[in-house]
Image (cartoon, one colour):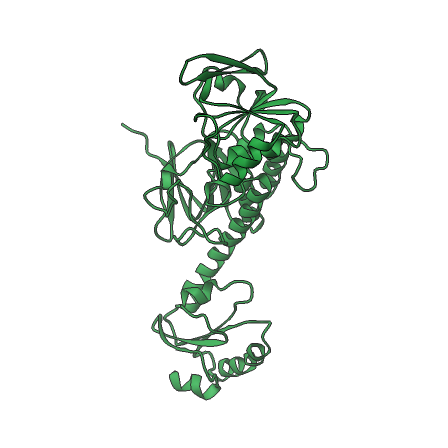
Length: 408
């Protein structure tokens, strides 16, 4: 007889333990939200494999990636965040309460923050696994360029990212050898990058080649290329091999529930909202321009803050705004607008004279328009009249005590 799954309730479930997920969890935990972070492999994500991060603010000594992510984890734990190392099997993101299923546990939650990141596309060549990340194969020139100052590096790929990152590497490395799958002179990048690369004296191209194998003892020492036309094996001695042949977002779990780009990235707005209420995405898993630890942290901060606002506004909306016990007045105003502030005294007068017969709510939209969006109001100041738990009337022009009372 199959064992019945345990059910646990949370305010926030963060899926993914990289810098974005850790930051989101820190923000949620600090807001006193019951939060759990679920990671299937390694807390810290791909960042833990980076030898040194020289461009993360506040760390002038360029620490290893795992040093930064370990500090993030400790900070999240200090904020009361729970951690679970397991794979998520399925999710149901619709409704006020979402479901996240693992092998042994069902998590019920008000908010899901997706920070599952992605994985670099690899060549599949022999011995590749042996040298991934800190053993000689890298996927980030920005992260590892400085460590290759004066060295010889190999770049795999000829798309925009490969050639532009290869050009960046020439600022540090003494030589950059590029393996291109196409015939001589043909690349997949834009023409400007192609011309710049071909004219760069530090860049050398080996055409019609793919990686056959990686070789070395403790660390990568050479890349064996294979000519696609002759099958000739070409050994290239090097210090590091950078692979730029694509990136695969980890969105398989969400493909049938969220809006994704053709490449599989989650589409969000600037608040990290996905289009389903209470579901946010942050970090490398979302459609964005720059994928770095610093941008992941920024995304996570927004997602964590947005989650707090969503939970707070949902409670306010249900219990205070759309209550059906008595007629309600919702005053939506912007605190930095003088006219909006001045009309607060009129709202207070109406509330006082109603002797408790009216439910009056004052909503400042300066920091968040969440409640206003739920009421479909985008003009401020405005008054929304609620009767029997439903929107009865919205007043956006010529606000006055008489006009409001006439609607009641």
